[in-house]
Structure formats: C-alpha cells, structure tokens
Image 1 (cartoon, rainbow, N blue to C red):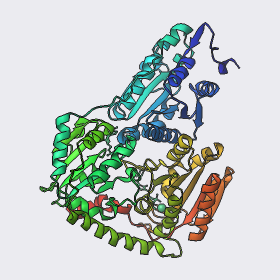
Image 2 (image 1 turned 90 degrees about the vertical axis):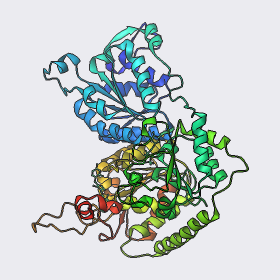
Image 3 (image 1 turned 135 degrees about the horizontal axis):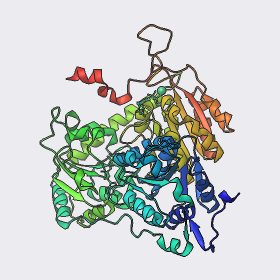
Image 4 (image 1 turned 45 degrees about the vertical axis):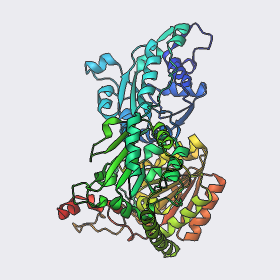
Length: 579
Ligand code: ADP
Ligand code: TPW
Ligand code: MG
C-alpha cells in the first residue's frame, strides 16, 4: 500500500510525514503516545516503520497523561499524537494538566484544512485548534509548510523544556503530511536543538542572601517539591540536607528524593515543623493550595495571614513565582542543580547544624507518630481498612524500591501518601497540582514503558474508572503493571443514601461488590479478588515478581472513607461553616 511507504533514504524527494519523523528522531525522541485516525493514521504507521515506539491508547487523555509522565521522568518532552477536533480536545486535559504540573510534553494534533476552518465551511472534525490550545499551554505553533517542520518541532521542544517546563501544542494540518520537497533541502531544514534546557546560574548575591538567612535560622526547614524531583540533582540535594543537618519535608512527588526513612525526614512531624519553622527553604515547590498558600494555621499564623516569625527562601527557575502568595525574603532564581550546588559551595565544615532543641523536638514527635502508625498498620480488620491493605503495599515497595508507584483517589491517595514510604527519586507519580482523577493508567503505562521497572498503581475505585479501559493497553504491550483497586463501592465510601429517597443510589455510590479483576482477565491479564491481607500480599508479590499485567480487586470497608479524604474542608458547605 503506497500510503504506508515512506520516501527511501536516498529518494530525491521527501515529504511531510518523513520530515516530522526525522525531526523528532533527530532530537532524541524514541516513543510516541497516541491514538490513530484521520489525518494521522499513516503517520503512526510510518513512525513505527522508522523505529519510533508507538504506544497506541484507547482514549487520548491517557495517551496525553502518559506523555506528560514520560516528560517528568526523562526530562525529554513526552509526545502525544491525536486526531483533529474531538481527539485533540480529549488530549487537551492532559496538556493543561502537564502545564500546571510543570511537566514537559508536546501535544501534536492533526487538524483539518485551514481554508475550510477559517471560513467555517464545515470540514470533517473542523475546529480552530491552535486558538483553543493557546491559553492552556506554554506555547502553541502551527506548521503549514513542509520546509518549516524542522523549525516547528525545534521550537516546540525548546518551549516545553526551557525555563519552567510545561505543555506545548503543535498543530499539523492534514495537507502538510503529503507535501513533498527536495530531500536534501528537507534534511537541511531540520534542527537538532542545542542545549534545550540551558542551566540558569543563580546570581552570587542571591546565593549569599539565602545562605545568610539559612545560617541564622534557629528552626530551619527544607521543603522539596516535584520540581526538585524533576531536576535530577539528587546527589546534591541529599548532600545539602545532610551537610546542613536541616530537617526536610517532601511534597508527595518528591518522596524518595531522600529515602522516607531518612533521619532528617520530618514527614511524620509535618504539622509541627510547618507551624514552628523560622526559615523555610522551598526547593522546586510552590506555595499553592497544597501548602495552604503559606498562610494560616498550617503555618502557625492566624487565618489569611502569614507567620511574622517565619521567612522563606525559594529556589525556582521561574522568577515570577516569587511572592505569589507570601513575601519571599530570599529568592534564588535558577535551575535547581545550579542553585543547590552554589549553596553547597558556600557551606563548609564550620557550618553550624540546627540547634538540638529543634531537631530533638522533631525526632520526639516523629517517634510518637510513627509508633502510633505502626500500631494501626498491625491491625488486620475484616473487611480490610485502607491502612491494613496499604501496609502490604508498603512492605512490597520496601522490598522493591525500584518499583514505581502511581497513586490516585481521595482516601486511597491520602493514606497511601503517608503510609507507603519511597526510597528512590522519581518513583512516585500522582494526582499532582490539580488533584486530578484519571492519571492512573496513562502514568502507569508511561512509567513501565520509559523505565522497564515494575509499576504498582494504587487506585481508588472511582479514580480507576476514569482510565480503566487502558488495562487493554497494558495487556497489549504486556507491561509490568500491577493495578490495585481499593474497592469501597464508591467515591469516598459506598454508604451514602439518596437524599430524595428514590430508587437511584446516591451520586457517590457504585455497584456493590464489583469485580474489577474481571476487566483485566478479559484481555488476558491476571485478575485477583482479594478480601484479606494475605490474599493481597500473595497476589502483589507474584505480580511484581512475574511482571505480568495484574489487577487486584482489594475489598475495602465501604464505611471507612471520609468525604474528599483530607480536603473535606474545601467542600462548599464545610467552607461556609468555617467562616
Ligand atoms: P509540588 O506540587 O511538589 O509542591 P510544584 O509543582 O508546586 O511542586 O512546584 C514545582 C516548581 O518547580 C515550579 O515552580 C517550577 O517552576 C519549579 N521547577 C521545575 N523544574 C525546575 C528546575 N529544573 N529548576 C528550578 N525550578 C524548577
Ligand atoms: C477529573 C473529584 C476527587 S477524588 C474523587 C473524585 C471523583 C474520587 C474519590 O473516590 P475513589 O477514592 O477514587 O474511589 P476513595 O478511596 O476515597 O474512595 N473529576 C476529576 N478530578 C477530580 N479530582 C474529581 C472529579 C474527585
Ligand atoms: Mg472509592
């Protein structure tokens, strides 16, 4: 079939298909996540023919989420490829989410003919996609001519990776692909991007200011965010914590940057250190809602105000992030690698570790809270509680610290975040800045494909539903993914009642005793129905050892969850009551 052949390497003419593929390959892209259809079906075939790995999904949102996660894990923009209008829109949520999370990705979408779109003459899947994408990503480009493909791809890569990473949209109208041009001119038109994420060295006076503030602190704290995980400055970050002796708190996706059982981890004394610290150094973390905007009770201050006895140092690549919620006394603008190594250079043997009163107090609280948790984790109720099931996963991750954990849900998320310790950097992927449901299977596929390591996806039953059909994708590519569905019959719990008294169940309640394991079996994977800890332990151990696609339907007490997990207070009625 002629549509499936590409211009040979020595052909006198090349075309748009070939130039898109060559431009991506020239820039080290080896995998594309997507969903075929007009006008990109042939592109996916030809990509495969040219040695790109094409991971084909059942819904574009999950291909997009996979691209975003791949970007976070590899520091190369993850590529998502979609068809026009509806396919594009399905991918757009992932593009926006990637941008919010500061993950580099490029959504490449085919689009219909400009002439028809601009005159609104009604083309197949007609939509002005560029205009729609623009406000939801870092940058958006359209390529109309084959000779501009090289520039288009280069600019997309640069925009995704440089400065604060994020999502980029690249619009490729159908006609572009079949345009032909002189092969030699085509080759010359491609750009291999040099230094796409240039280091940004912090200003020396900014480094001194930060060091002076840190050195004078009586109760210092380091807060690591997912920007720090992304930056891959793992050894220097660890050295900074250990040389200064400053306790640290990881945000959820920074867990494992230092092992969660590290002596200086303050996770088990979180509320104490946030309220009591006098100098807080943020490394790749924003003072957004996840950190109560740096204000209020969490930070030891009155509602809506900042703590007068507290000062911030903030390391970030984006200068405009500074002062976005509270005053930052010492901004340190640059890439995390350069900033942390500059700080390290200013810390010598004379550095005074924080007062024992501070670190000792933290250690005491940690011990108390950890032994409380240990007692809870030992309980073995029937049906399983979130904690008793998570204790099993905690043990498995400890035994296989290279495994990647994907986590979404409400209670399932909150409990897993605090119970499942991480030991290595970038091994935890979750709902991120938006707290979005639906990242599960896309992130799991990306983690398996880009690392080859076992993936353990800890999923609320509602959360799983958003991307559940991708278990077929997991089976098709035979990926080492074990999905554990925390089945409590619904959103938050399965016990709500219909306030109108009708026959319909409450909006948060699902079919009781559903068997999600059978979904995995439908595609040839391993399905396990686990009602006890021992069944869960056996199935999980086997799944991780065998690498076979597995789904464990873990039956959890349907009454155990709380509304919205730990963010109940954000529900309008609860928020109104607090006023
Ligand atoms: P978390 O949710 O874990 O608190 P955020 O997503 O809020 O983390 O913050 C990540 C921050 O990291 C963003 O402000 C982003 O600009 C910053 N960042 C990302 N990559 C780098 C980097 N290489 N160097 C410096 N800052 C970075
Ligand atoms: C895209 C709102 C937040 S958490 C959640 C929903 C629907 C599911 C919680 O139930 P689950 O977990 O997964 O069963 P558990 O353990 O508490 O029972 N749509 C999107 N994102 C969000 N965050 C929502 C809806 C929500
Ligand atoms: Mg649930």
